[in-house]
Amino acid sequence: MAVQQTISPVDGSIYVERELADPARVEAALARAVTAQEAWRETPIGQRARYCSAMVDAIVARRDALAEELTWQMGRPIAAGGGEIGGFEERARGMIGLAEAALAPVELPDKPGFTRYITREPLGVSFIVAPWNFPFMTAVNAIVPALMAGNAVILKHSAQTPLCAERLQEAFDAAGLPDGVFQHLHLSHAATEALIRDARIDHVSFTGSVGGGEMVERNAAGRFIATGLELGGKDPAYVRADADLDEAVPGVMDGAFFNSGQSCCGIERIYVHRDLYDAFVERAVAWVRELRLGNPTDPATTLGPVVKPAAADFVRGQVEEAVTAGARAWIDPGDYPLSRPGSAYLAPQVLTGVDHSMRVMREESFGPVVGIMPVEDDEEAVRLMNDSDFGLTAAVFTRDIAAGEALARRLEAGTVFTNRCDYLDPELAWTGVKQSGRGCSLSRLGYETLTRPKSFHLKH
Image (tube, rainbow, N blue to C red; front, side, top):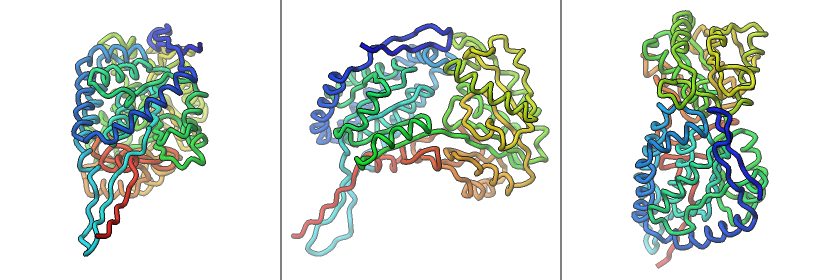
């Protein structure tokens, strides 16, 4: 039997070992899901909501214990761990609340002699592949709306955070959800691909890398099923000449360094109007120097390790290449004894003198580093912000809200902000453009991707 190991970035120890599901177990799960969905699709939305709400209650009740498990699985400081459960609750309850209206039949104007309407029909079995960086929040984006829409769910969580899948299963079981409606499987890459190809899977939701998204599309090709793909990001922020630096600096820098920069919608590129550039850089560097890199189980730690040593070394490589090409690194890694090659602990870094020829300004870093460039005006800012293969979010910091909104309309991103960043509002559609993915989750619109329209044309 193949075994999956979770190596904790905290100390390099094996934190979790789990047997991977063999073909017989996968087959049994699929059969249960198909059978369970036939009854679940007929379950009233109000009853679905009660099951899902009880699941959320069960997760919230275990907030502290789950926060500690998160720290050991993926390295987030314990002081920030409970916030993920808060975000999980907000998204779950938000989507539960939107379900009835979003799934209601579309009524059409009267037409003599006919009754006409459109219903939203569940797709069947939804296969959800969730990532490790925000393992509860990203998973719930797909799980709760899929269930509320009348689908059965099979969850494959990241090998880095397998306990999250198990805790969700326990919470649904405690809620009394009918057997087979929600299941989790620990799967190898090959088994994951095989499951996507199975004719009984009707929808795939994937959050992860661009390469992972290509894998989903390759295995789903020719089956004409719905897929939702949230992939990479290289999200920009622009600080206009009229921005309030007291708000812009902590807002942008927290967006860049929270979760050690391991956020799909984290800020990875900063553009600052030349009039504010020097002041912004000075304050930004001072802000970063206040971060405390350390063991994430220590409540005083504000910057934990990244997920694994290879991820840290990837960022180190980006930084070294940029400095060799003429960039200035403002933070001395020597001030952070834990940060050394081959370790998951990585000193934060702020770079200036960067440009778009450098990997650190083009490739997703997914670590505690950010490059800052001066711009002459709004036009240059928009050009540089859009000069990317990605387009998940983008942010403009300005006192002139009308000007910020006008700039936001020109930005190639699924979500645009003014005066905030790195946030997901469950009542707004979550989507990306270019290599940041396809499809839509959350909001009322998210339910459209989890259902199919069925038209009723009834002649009297």
